[in-house]
Length: 194
Image 1 (tube, rainbow, N blue to C red):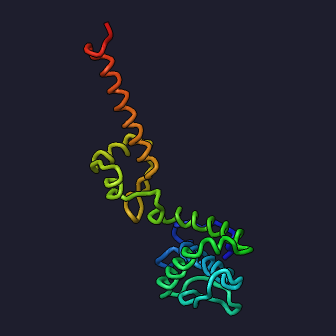
Image 2: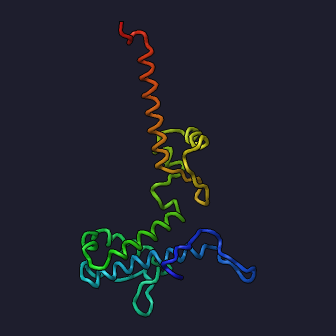
Image 3: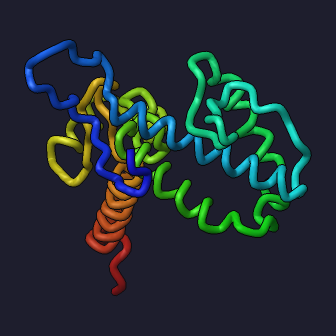
């Protein structure tokens, strides 16, 4: 895997027709391992520099040279704990020399990961979240979607709706109601000047 090549996709893996095919997306596994590897490298860099206190690297898959290359099978709770630890020390991490390029790379990988898995992105809502966000009924949201202008994703997580576009739609509806109220006041004979 070439970590600087972002040719990842959530499409099925290629097969020549011979041999078994993996039931999961190999690209997604590689991307997840690379994302965890960057988290581990960031933690190692900061611990080696002394800007944050050392912690054990449970759950991380380390190669013989001691570099983080991914997550062990049962490592998710430990990786999450390391992420929380790093979040608690953000000012110290940002002051660590040499983390700039690593943080930029982490941002690129996280963005690609969120494109592959929109359910991890706060900018996409499930129908239930959209109902709660807008305060509208399911039928109203489907009506807005059918009229266009609100991007959706329909995949293995179900329907995902753009939060930003829903918000814009609600603002347009509010502006339209204000305009209609203004016209109604102007048209009312009681409000006309003599």
